[in-house]
Amino acid sequence: MGVFIIRSNSDKRYFIQATPNLKGKINSVKFQLEGGVFVNRELQREWSEKGESAFTIEILEKLEYDKDESKTDYSEELELLKMIWEERLSQKGMEAYGK
Image (cartoon, rainbow, N blue to C red):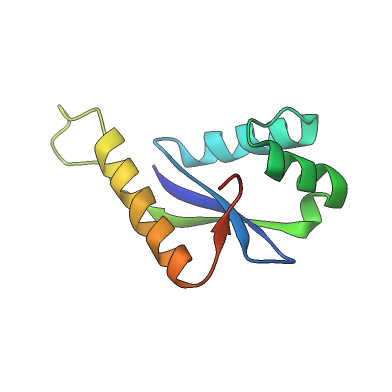
């Protein structure tokens, strides 16, 4: 689980998402973008116009599961991690799609 980014290679725009299943979510997002049905219309439009090669998809940070196996909900930790990364990207002058 962790945070990943889809970054435009031509400008300072990005889409970021936190998820408990990095590999599965990245595959799902790519499938939606390739199918033209991604929820973020601005990113979808650019993806459709420029193609996958105009973007970089990378994992920004992984979050390890707690050793206490009774903990199953990491939504707060993931949301906090996403907010931290949004702040870091903002400080670098980057702008999120749809904002």
